[in-house]
Length: 222
Length: 195
Image (cartoon, rainbow over all chains, first blue to last red; front, side, top):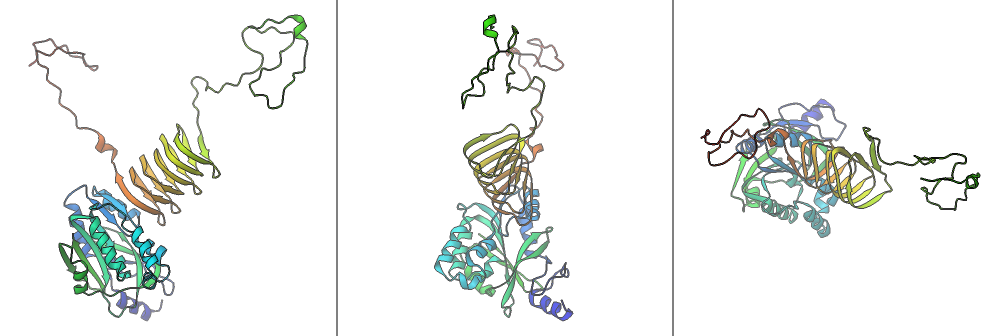
């Protein structure tokens, strides 16, 4: 990748604690490591007690399973981006407008009983959803959380970005995440703080974290 | 046992009907008197005393089983199974062509195919990248390759955590007679001498 293109990419999608860990073919997102204050706070919640039930919506991965279970917690996996790929195909934003696709997505997502989880790692999946699927998904998410439960979410904060890379999030340690690309780029919705507060108005509290790059981190308390 | 007259001992070609069972009596040997054992070899399915039957069993990809499977050896399933599979103290392998709708229990479980059901392995679960598992997992260790599809919960039960804390030696009152002396280093106790 030419030097100017890599700089443009870093400016657009955020600087991280480290440079891309491996060279990537043209038009493929790079693998990134990022320091996450939001995840650091989430880990403080994990360390405060044992025996929590945590939902990881980035699909099953050895790193995340090992990290969560080593702290004495139970982990459940649900690949929400994989469900989007299955239901919405190549274009998430356009294809979820079809009622049949939206219905199928809702039926397959968050199919857990009420108040099943103490914590949820949603990562950046919700930025690929639009109304009404977005509100329906948030409603399901709050339904499966126990009172006082903590949800970690990321949203791309770059207003000018028209496409966002789709990532898997892998836990490296309490403060560091590894973002590995999956499926290239997708169009995403831009959210400001006010929009997100309204989206989670049923939650007990919402907290935003300042970051140096274009990823907005937030913690929601059920 | 048989006693044969001489005229009956003439060699005869046995007439074996088509579809005769395998265990039909063998032809009588001429000019021999067997008193202790039958002349024809007997197929004995029981293992010889002291021998261990090793190996593993397999259900091929064209096999469909509906019901309960209990195995006392390593088992590989590459077909369709609906029901339950129990393979205690052994390894259970779900092959790449397998489609299983069953609860699974084994010492170690290797998953390459598709499973819908809960999985319980006392030692380890190994989920390969081509596997698809929908259900809850209970195990001591888990290995999951990138690319594997899993939807469900994971309970890690550490084997050492199951050991109970050592109990203090119970005190015996004079009114309660000892029912049985301890098996190790018995210490004689007489009623009334222990508080």
